[in-house]
Amino acid sequence: MLLFDWRRLKNVRFLEKKVIKYENVFKNTEEVIKEIAKGNFELNKDIGSDLLLGSLAELSEKMSTYQAQEKERKWISEGLVYFVDILRKDQSNKDELYEDILSSLVKYMKANQGGLFLLKDMEEQPVLEMVACYAYERKKFLNKTVRIGEGLLGQCFLEKETTVFTDVPPFYTNITSGLGQATPGCLLLVPLKFNNEVLGVIEIASFHVFQKFEIDFVEKIAESVASVIFNIQNTEQSRRLLIDSEQREQMLKEQEEELRQNMEELVTTQEEMKRKQKELDQKGGMLKLIIDNIPFPVFVKDNIGRYTLVNKAEAALFNMSEEDIVGKDDSYFVNNREEWEVIQRSDLKTLDSDFPVELPQQSFTTSVGVTHIFKTTKIPFVNSLTGDKNILGVSVDLTAVINLENKLRDKSHVIK
Image 1 (spheres, helix red, strand yellow):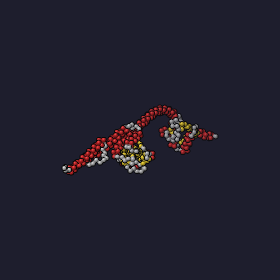
Image 2: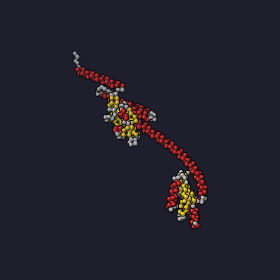
Image 3: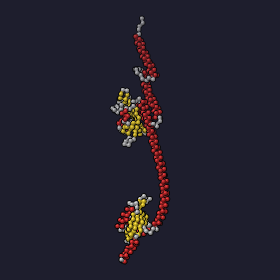
Image 4: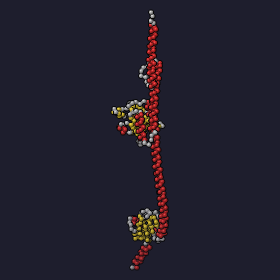
Protein backbone atom coordinates (compact mmCIF):
# COMPACT_ATOMS: atom_id res chain seq x y z
CA MET A 1 0.00 0.00 0.00
CA LEU A 2 1.33 3.35 -1.12
CA LEU A 3 1.04 6.34 1.10
CA PHE A 4 0.00 9.62 -0.72
CA ASP A 5 2.37 12.53 -0.02
CA TRP A 6 0.08 15.59 0.32
CA ARG A 7 3.06 17.86 0.83
CA ARG A 8 4.47 16.96 -2.55
CA LEU A 9 1.07 17.53 -4.20
CA LYS A 10 0.90 20.99 -2.67
CA ASN A 11 4.30 21.89 -4.12
CA VAL A 12 3.24 20.64 -7.55
CA ARG A 13 0.14 22.81 -7.51
CA PHE A 14 2.21 25.79 -6.41
CA LEU A 15 4.58 25.25 -9.27
CA GLU A 16 1.68 24.86 -11.64
CA LYS A 17 0.27 28.27 -10.62
CA LYS A 18 3.67 29.85 -11.10
CA VAL A 19 3.94 28.32 -14.55
CA ILE A 20 0.50 29.67 -15.50
CA LYS A 21 1.38 33.09 -14.13
CA TYR A 22 4.58 33.27 -16.08
CA GLU A 23 2.84 32.03 -19.16
CA ASN A 24 0.43 34.99 -18.84
CA VAL A 25 3.32 37.38 -18.23
CA PHE A 26 5.16 36.09 -21.27
CA LYS A 27 1.97 36.28 -23.31
CA ASN A 28 1.29 39.89 -22.24
CA THR A 29 4.92 40.76 -22.79
CA GLU A 30 4.75 39.29 -26.26
CA GLU A 31 1.66 41.40 -27.03
CA VAL A 32 3.28 44.60 -25.67
CA ILE A 33 6.40 44.01 -27.73
CA LYS A 34 4.28 43.42 -30.84
CA GLU A 35 2.37 46.69 -30.24
CA ILE A 36 5.62 48.60 -29.70
CA ALA A 37 7.01 47.04 -32.87
CA LYS A 38 3.92 48.37 -34.73
CA GLY A 39 4.59 51.87 -33.37
CA ASN A 40 1.74 51.82 -30.88
CA PHE A 41 3.22 53.08 -27.63
CA GLU A 42 -0.06 53.53 -25.78
CA LEU A 43 -1.05 50.47 -23.69
CA ASN A 44 -4.76 50.30 -22.98
CA LYS A 45 -4.85 47.24 -20.67
CA ASP A 46 -3.42 46.50 -17.29
CA ILE A 47 -0.14 44.73 -17.84
CA GLY A 48 0.43 43.95 -14.20
CA SER A 49 3.18 44.87 -11.86
CA ASP A 50 5.76 42.47 -13.13
CA LEU A 51 9.19 44.05 -13.34
CA LEU A 52 9.61 43.20 -17.01
CA LEU A 53 6.18 44.45 -17.94
CA GLY A 54 6.66 47.56 -15.79
CA SER A 55 9.87 48.35 -17.63
CA LEU A 56 8.12 47.80 -20.93
CA ALA A 57 5.29 50.09 -19.82
CA GLU A 58 7.78 52.81 -18.87
CA LEU A 59 9.56 52.37 -22.18
CA SER A 60 6.24 52.55 -23.99
CA GLU A 61 5.33 55.77 -22.20
CA LYS A 62 8.65 57.37 -23.06
CA MET A 63 8.39 56.21 -26.64
CA SER A 64 4.85 57.61 -26.79
CA THR A 65 6.06 60.97 -25.49
CA TYR A 66 8.94 60.93 -27.94
CA GLN A 67 6.60 60.01 -30.78
CA ALA A 68 4.28 62.94 -29.91
CA GLN A 69 7.23 65.34 -29.69
CA GLU A 70 8.63 64.04 -32.94
CA LYS A 71 5.26 64.51 -34.57
CA GLU A 72 5.16 68.09 -33.33
CA ARG A 73 8.73 68.75 -34.54
CA LYS A 74 7.89 67.27 -37.93
CA TRP A 75 4.75 69.39 -38.14
CA ILE A 76 6.72 72.52 -37.28
CA SER A 77 9.59 71.68 -39.68
CA GLU A 78 7.27 70.94 -42.56
CA GLY A 79 5.33 74.12 -41.82
CA LEU A 80 8.48 76.25 -41.80
CA VAL A 81 9.59 74.79 -45.13
CA TYR A 82 6.11 75.31 -46.54
CA PHE A 83 6.06 78.97 -45.54
CA VAL A 84 9.59 79.60 -46.77
CA ASP A 85 8.30 78.83 -50.27
CA ILE A 86 5.33 81.15 -49.76
CA LEU A 87 7.46 84.03 -48.43
CA ARG A 88 9.85 83.69 -51.38
CA LYS A 89 7.09 84.47 -53.87
CA ASP A 90 7.05 87.63 -55.96
CA GLN A 91 6.57 90.61 -53.67
CA SER A 92 5.52 93.05 -56.39
CA ASN A 93 1.85 92.40 -55.58
CA LYS A 94 1.84 92.72 -51.81
CA ASP A 95 -1.95 92.36 -51.46
CA GLU A 96 -1.94 88.91 -53.05
CA LEU A 97 1.09 87.92 -50.97
CA TYR A 98 -0.59 88.99 -47.72
CA GLU A 99 -3.75 87.07 -48.61
CA ASP A 100 -1.69 83.98 -49.49
CA ILE A 101 0.30 84.12 -46.24
CA LEU A 102 -2.79 84.49 -44.07
CA SER A 103 -5.00 81.90 -45.77
CA SER A 104 -2.13 79.38 -45.79
CA LEU A 105 -1.45 79.96 -42.09
CA VAL A 106 -5.11 79.60 -41.07
CA LYS A 107 -5.44 76.38 -43.08
CA TYR A 108 -2.17 74.92 -41.79
CA MET A 109 -3.28 75.66 -38.22
CA LYS A 110 -6.64 74.02 -39.02
CA ALA A 111 -8.22 77.19 -37.66
CA ASN A 112 -11.37 78.86 -38.91
CA GLN A 113 -10.67 82.53 -39.27
CA GLY A 114 -7.80 85.00 -39.53
CA GLY A 115 -6.81 88.62 -40.12
CA LEU A 116 -3.56 90.43 -40.90
CA PHE A 117 -3.28 93.99 -39.57
CA LEU A 118 -0.40 96.36 -40.36
CA LEU A 119 0.59 99.68 -38.84
CA LYS A 120 -0.43 102.65 -40.97
CA ASP A 121 0.66 106.21 -40.21
CA MET A 122 -2.28 108.62 -40.36
CA GLU A 123 -2.20 112.42 -40.06
CA GLU A 124 -3.99 112.40 -36.70
CA GLN A 125 -2.65 109.15 -35.20
CA PRO A 126 -1.36 105.73 -36.38
CA VAL A 127 -3.83 102.85 -36.75
CA LEU A 128 -3.79 99.13 -37.48
CA GLU A 129 -5.26 98.52 -40.93
CA MET A 130 -6.54 95.14 -42.09
CA VAL A 131 -4.60 94.21 -45.24
CA ALA A 132 -5.77 90.60 -45.50
CA CYS A 133 -8.54 88.45 -44.05
CA TYR A 134 -9.73 84.85 -44.19
CA ALA A 135 -13.35 83.80 -43.62
CA TYR A 136 -14.30 87.00 -41.78
CA GLU A 137 -17.94 87.93 -41.69
CA ARG A 138 -18.88 91.05 -43.61
CA LYS A 139 -19.42 93.26 -40.54
CA LYS A 140 -15.95 92.44 -39.27
CA PHE A 141 -14.36 93.16 -42.61
CA LEU A 142 -16.01 96.57 -42.89
CA ASN A 143 -14.19 97.73 -39.75
CA LYS A 144 -10.82 97.82 -41.43
CA THR A 145 -8.87 99.96 -38.93
CA VAL A 146 -8.15 99.69 -35.20
CA ARG A 147 -6.57 102.42 -33.11
CA ILE A 148 -3.39 101.67 -31.20
CA GLY A 149 -4.29 100.51 -27.69
CA GLU A 150 -7.94 99.97 -28.64
CA GLY A 151 -9.48 96.55 -28.05
CA LEU A 152 -7.61 93.25 -27.97
CA LEU A 153 -5.71 93.96 -31.19
CA GLY A 154 -4.60 97.43 -30.13
CA GLN A 155 -3.48 96.15 -26.73
CA CYS A 156 -1.49 93.29 -28.29
CA PHE A 157 0.30 95.80 -30.55
CA LEU A 158 1.03 98.08 -27.62
CA GLU A 159 2.28 95.31 -25.31
CA LYS A 160 4.35 93.59 -28.05
CA GLU A 161 3.49 90.17 -26.61
CA THR A 162 1.57 87.14 -27.89
CA THR A 163 -1.92 86.93 -26.41
CA VAL A 164 -4.13 83.81 -26.22
CA PHE A 165 -7.79 84.02 -25.25
CA THR A 166 -9.81 80.90 -24.47
CA ASP A 167 -12.68 83.00 -23.16
CA VAL A 168 -13.32 85.23 -26.17
CA PRO A 169 -15.43 88.32 -25.40
CA PRO A 170 -18.99 88.12 -26.79
CA PHE A 171 -19.58 89.88 -30.11
CA TYR A 172 -15.82 90.23 -30.70
CA THR A 173 -16.09 87.94 -33.70
CA ASN A 174 -18.24 85.07 -34.89
CA ILE A 175 -17.14 82.07 -36.90
CA THR A 176 -19.61 81.04 -39.60
CA SER A 177 -19.87 77.30 -40.19
CA GLY A 178 -22.39 74.74 -41.41
CA LEU A 179 -23.91 74.83 -37.94
CA GLY A 180 -24.44 78.60 -38.06
CA GLN A 181 -22.52 81.34 -36.24
CA ALA A 182 -20.63 80.73 -33.02
CA THR A 183 -18.03 82.45 -30.84
CA PRO A 184 -14.58 80.89 -31.30
CA GLY A 185 -13.16 78.74 -28.54
CA CYS A 186 -9.70 80.28 -28.86
CA LEU A 187 -8.30 83.57 -30.16
CA LEU A 188 -4.59 83.95 -30.88
CA LEU A 189 -2.99 87.39 -31.35
CA VAL A 190 0.68 87.48 -32.36
CA PRO A 191 2.61 90.75 -32.92
CA LEU A 192 4.73 91.03 -36.07
CA LYS A 193 8.08 92.14 -34.64
CA PHE A 194 11.24 93.05 -36.54
CA ASN A 195 14.25 94.37 -34.61
CA ASN A 196 11.95 94.87 -31.60
CA GLU A 197 9.72 97.11 -33.70
CA VAL A 198 6.09 96.01 -34.08
CA LEU A 199 4.84 96.26 -37.66
CA GLY A 200 1.41 94.72 -37.12
CA VAL A 201 -0.60 91.86 -35.62
CA ILE A 202 -1.79 88.44 -36.84
CA GLU A 203 -5.19 87.38 -35.50
CA ILE A 204 -6.32 83.72 -35.71
CA ALA A 205 -9.60 82.37 -34.35
CA SER A 206 -10.55 78.70 -33.96
CA PHE A 207 -13.08 76.41 -32.33
CA HIS A 208 -10.28 74.33 -30.78
CA VAL A 209 -7.71 75.56 -28.27
CA PHE A 210 -4.22 76.02 -29.70
CA GLN A 211 -1.40 73.92 -28.23
CA LYS A 212 1.85 75.49 -27.08
CA PHE A 213 3.82 74.09 -30.03
CA GLU A 214 1.24 75.59 -32.40
CA ILE A 215 1.57 78.99 -30.75
CA ASP A 216 5.38 78.73 -30.92
CA PHE A 217 5.07 77.90 -34.62
CA VAL A 218 2.90 80.95 -35.34
CA GLU A 219 5.41 83.15 -33.48
CA LYS A 220 8.25 81.83 -35.67
CA ILE A 221 6.18 82.41 -38.80
CA ALA A 222 5.34 85.90 -37.53
CA GLU A 223 9.07 86.73 -37.33
CA SER A 224 9.58 85.68 -40.95
CA VAL A 225 6.45 87.51 -42.09
CA ALA A 226 7.58 90.66 -40.25
CA SER A 227 10.93 90.47 -42.05
CA VAL A 228 9.18 90.20 -45.42
CA ILE A 229 6.84 93.09 -44.58
CA PHE A 230 9.78 95.22 -43.47
CA ASN A 231 11.54 94.52 -46.79
CA ILE A 232 8.37 95.34 -48.76
CA GLN A 233 7.89 98.62 -46.88
CA ASN A 234 11.55 99.52 -47.31
CA THR A 235 11.35 98.74 -51.02
CA GLU A 236 8.22 100.86 -51.37
CA GLN A 237 9.83 103.72 -49.47
CA SER A 238 12.97 103.47 -51.61
CA ARG A 239 10.79 103.43 -54.73
CA ARG A 240 8.89 106.49 -53.54
CA LEU A 241 12.15 108.28 -52.72
CA LEU A 242 13.54 107.32 -56.13
CA ILE A 243 10.41 108.57 -57.92
CA ASP A 244 10.48 111.75 -55.83
CA SER A 245 14.18 112.20 -56.59
CA GLU A 246 13.59 111.67 -60.31
CA GLN A 247 10.71 114.15 -60.26
CA ARG A 248 12.85 116.69 -58.42
CA GLU A 249 15.69 116.10 -60.85
CA GLN A 250 13.33 116.55 -63.79
CA MET A 251 11.92 119.67 -62.17
CA LEU A 252 15.43 121.05 -61.63
CA LYS A 253 16.29 120.31 -65.25
CA GLU A 254 13.16 122.11 -66.41
CA GLN A 255 13.91 125.03 -64.10
CA GLU A 256 17.50 125.13 -65.33
CA GLU A 257 16.31 125.08 -68.92
CA GLU A 258 13.77 127.78 -68.18
CA LEU A 259 16.43 129.81 -66.38
CA ARG A 260 18.80 129.33 -69.30
CA GLN A 261 16.12 130.50 -71.74
CA ASN A 262 15.31 133.45 -69.47
CA MET A 263 19.00 134.34 -69.29
CA GLU A 264 19.27 134.16 -73.06
CA GLU A 265 16.18 136.31 -73.41
CA LEU A 266 17.54 138.68 -70.77
CA VAL A 267 20.88 138.93 -72.55
CA THR A 268 19.08 139.49 -75.85
CA THR A 269 16.83 142.09 -74.20
CA GLN A 270 19.81 143.82 -72.59
CA GLU A 271 21.64 143.91 -75.89
CA GLU A 272 18.53 145.27 -77.59
CA MET A 273 18.12 147.83 -74.82
CA LYS A 274 21.76 148.83 -75.15
CA ARG A 275 21.33 149.20 -78.87
CA LYS A 276 18.15 151.24 -78.46
CA GLN A 277 19.73 153.25 -75.65
CA LYS A 278 22.65 153.97 -77.89
CA GLU A 279 20.26 155.06 -80.61
CA LEU A 280 18.32 157.13 -78.11
CA ASP A 281 21.51 158.66 -76.80
CA GLN A 282 22.49 159.53 -80.30
CA LYS A 283 19.04 160.87 -81.11
CA GLY A 284 18.80 162.52 -77.72
CA GLY A 285 22.18 164.12 -78.19
CA MET A 286 21.09 165.40 -81.58
CA LEU A 287 17.74 166.59 -80.19
CA LYS A 288 19.44 168.29 -77.24
CA LEU A 289 21.81 169.99 -79.60
CA ILE A 290 18.89 171.21 -81.68
CA ILE A 291 16.73 172.50 -78.85
CA ASP A 292 19.69 174.11 -77.11
CA ASN A 293 20.19 176.20 -80.23
CA ILE A 294 16.58 177.38 -80.19
CA PRO A 295 16.72 180.93 -78.76
CA PHE A 296 13.49 180.70 -76.75
CA PRO A 297 12.57 178.35 -73.88
CA VAL A 298 11.67 174.70 -74.76
CA PHE A 299 10.74 172.09 -72.14
CA VAL A 300 9.20 168.62 -71.62
CA LYS A 301 7.10 167.63 -68.59
CA ASP A 302 5.89 164.19 -67.45
CA ASN A 303 2.33 163.23 -66.51
CA ILE A 304 2.57 164.88 -63.06
CA GLY A 305 4.17 168.13 -64.21
CA ARG A 306 7.84 167.40 -63.50
CA TYR A 307 10.45 168.64 -65.95
CA THR A 308 12.23 165.87 -67.84
CA LEU A 309 13.99 168.02 -70.41
CA VAL A 310 14.85 171.75 -70.71
CA ASN A 311 16.98 173.65 -73.17
CA LYS A 312 19.52 176.31 -72.28
CA ALA A 313 17.05 179.17 -72.77
CA GLU A 314 14.67 177.64 -70.22
CA ALA A 315 17.52 177.06 -67.75
CA ALA A 316 18.67 180.64 -68.18
CA LEU A 317 15.14 181.88 -67.47
CA PHE A 318 15.19 180.03 -64.13
CA ASN A 319 18.78 181.09 -63.56
CA MET A 320 19.63 177.46 -62.72
CA SER A 321 21.48 174.53 -64.26
CA GLU A 322 19.57 171.94 -66.28
CA GLU A 323 20.42 169.26 -63.70
CA ASP A 324 18.80 171.34 -60.92
CA ILE A 325 15.59 171.73 -62.90
CA VAL A 326 14.99 168.18 -64.19
CA GLY A 327 12.86 166.07 -61.82
CA LYS A 328 11.10 169.05 -60.22
CA ASP A 329 7.78 170.78 -60.92
CA ASP A 330 7.03 174.52 -61.14
CA SER A 331 6.35 174.82 -57.40
CA TYR A 332 10.13 174.89 -56.89
CA PHE A 333 10.65 177.85 -59.24
CA VAL A 334 7.49 179.98 -59.32
CA ASN A 335 7.09 182.25 -56.30
CA ASN A 336 3.85 183.95 -57.43
CA ARG A 337 0.90 181.74 -56.50
CA GLU A 338 -1.41 183.11 -59.20
CA GLU A 339 1.22 182.42 -61.87
CA TRP A 340 1.75 178.86 -60.51
CA GLU A 341 -2.00 178.13 -60.57
CA VAL A 342 -2.21 179.28 -64.21
CA ILE A 343 0.67 176.96 -65.11
CA GLN A 344 -0.88 174.04 -63.21
CA ARG A 345 -4.34 174.46 -64.81
CA SER A 346 -2.84 174.66 -68.29
CA ASP A 347 -0.74 171.52 -67.64
CA LEU A 348 -3.82 169.55 -66.54
CA LYS A 349 -5.80 170.83 -69.51
CA THR A 350 -3.05 169.75 -71.88
CA LEU A 351 -2.81 166.25 -70.33
CA ASP A 352 -6.59 165.85 -70.66
CA SER A 353 -6.58 166.97 -74.29
CA ASP A 354 -5.36 165.53 -77.55
CA PHE A 355 -4.73 168.98 -79.01
CA PRO A 356 -2.25 171.78 -78.25
CA VAL A 357 -3.19 174.30 -75.57
CA GLU A 358 -2.10 177.92 -76.11
CA LEU A 359 -1.53 180.61 -73.47
CA PRO A 360 -1.46 183.91 -75.39
CA GLN A 361 0.06 185.89 -72.52
CA GLN A 362 1.53 184.03 -69.55
CA SER A 363 3.23 186.03 -66.83
CA PHE A 364 6.28 184.61 -65.08
CA THR A 365 8.28 186.40 -62.37
CA THR A 366 11.86 185.23 -61.95
CA SER A 367 13.60 184.63 -58.63
CA VAL A 368 15.18 188.11 -58.84
CA GLY A 369 11.75 189.77 -59.32
CA VAL A 370 11.82 190.34 -63.08
CA THR A 371 8.46 189.66 -64.74
CA HIS A 372 8.30 188.16 -68.24
CA ILE A 373 5.30 187.72 -70.49
CA PHE A 374 5.35 184.62 -72.68
CA LYS A 375 3.21 183.18 -75.39
CA THR A 376 3.33 179.50 -74.48
CA THR A 377 2.11 176.53 -76.53
CA LYS A 378 1.77 173.18 -74.77
CA ILE A 379 1.49 170.08 -76.96
CA PRO A 380 0.37 166.67 -75.53
CA PHE A 381 2.18 163.50 -76.70
CA VAL A 382 2.65 159.90 -75.56
CA ASN A 383 6.08 158.98 -74.28
CA SER A 384 7.08 155.79 -76.16
CA LEU A 385 9.31 154.64 -73.29
CA THR A 386 6.82 154.98 -70.43
CA GLY A 387 3.50 154.90 -72.27
CA ASP A 388 2.36 158.00 -70.32
CA LYS A 389 1.13 161.28 -71.76
CA ASN A 390 3.72 164.08 -71.55
CA ILE A 391 3.81 167.78 -72.39
CA LEU A 392 6.07 169.52 -74.93
CA GLY A 393 6.15 173.25 -74.20
CA VAL A 394 7.49 176.12 -76.30
CA SER A 395 7.51 179.69 -74.92
CA VAL A 396 8.14 182.90 -76.84
CA ASP A 397 9.14 185.92 -74.75
CA LEU A 398 6.75 188.78 -75.63
CA THR A 399 7.99 191.11 -72.90
CA ALA A 400 10.04 193.44 -75.17
CA VAL A 401 7.33 193.55 -77.82
CA ILE A 402 4.59 194.34 -75.31
CA ASN A 403 6.76 196.96 -73.62
CA LEU A 404 7.47 198.55 -77.03
CA GLU A 405 3.78 198.51 -77.92
CA ASN A 406 2.96 200.18 -74.60
CA LYS A 407 5.55 202.89 -75.21
CA LEU A 408 4.24 203.54 -78.73
CA ARG A 409 0.71 203.69 -77.36
CA ASP A 410 1.79 206.18 -74.70
CA LYS A 411 3.55 208.35 -77.31
CA SER A 412 0.52 208.33 -79.60
CA HIS A 413 -1.61 209.61 -76.73
CA VAL A 414 0.87 212.42 -76.11
CA ILE A 415 0.84 213.44 -79.78
CA LYS A 416 -2.91 213.54 -79.90
